[in-house]
Length: 392
Image 1 (cartoon, rainbow, N blue to C red):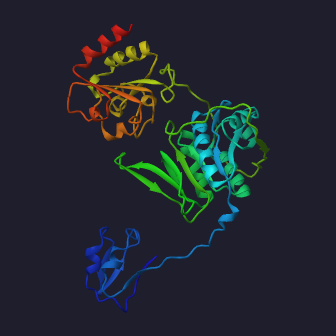
Image 2: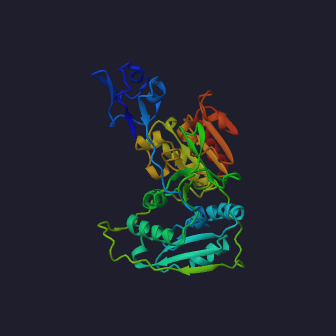
Image 3: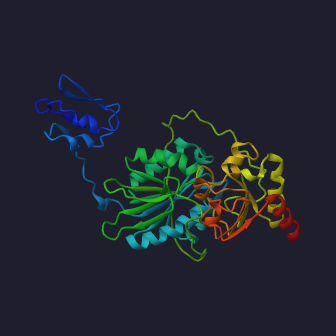
């Protein structure tokens, strides 16, 4: 908390000038701070030559780090099929577990899921903690939060990782709040600091213009959600041995008014956008919805997925599941073909890690050409149909 010592304040207004949030007023020659506006940035403290403003920091109970061990991976599954990002996390998790000299543990929730534990072990898990319960058959925030939180309280993991999927982004923050710890979302890099043993969690910030490395030094477990297609899975080894631990969670006291109504599959995408090795994406340069058939034809002949820029989606030319970028999907195909896309930084954040990028745009100064391996400057309405015809 921040406090003004009235006996020392002379109303010089230096703090008022230093405050960028208009949170200070002078009344009766004494500074008063509006706590609804104050961000505790400390600028006023530094500006006061009379030490009349202080910020009091309350201490916290020291954590016994020796009680926390192992690295946990939330093994997301839907319809008894493990999400691909889980295998990527197991690959990275095995590297981190080796550095920390601990076990890599997969947390598996659902109903009639016992066979999935073997697959998790084959991809690197040393242990699988499984909760098989009808309440967990379909994903709902509160039952999943209760399950993972209670397991974490019991076993005390040092690190918990999840994919930055719809499911992970939905309930993992709730778990972090329940465990009174921090959470770094949308990470693209994870490393162990050799000096402090803290988890270094790297994520893009400011539209991908910078990479921020975040640590959680004073709370455990350390938690992060990780983008799909930024880490590499281990080779599957069916001969690997592991331990399966079955746990039971009591849901009788859980009050949850939400219900799972059903799942509607996106039938407009023949190839999964996130998993595709080749993606053809259309942008504002297509001019209207009807012209998206050019993108569809090229994607079909290449057996690729169809992507779209935010501008295309906002214009209702194509549905949101096709959107690539900071507010859409992050993908890493072997080949990415950007058609009529200028290359805004928000779009680049979702596709610039593609192995090979081909850009088609009539503007030679379009930012997309700065990240492209091959650039074609010209009219997309002439170029793309010719490519499609040639490939056929």
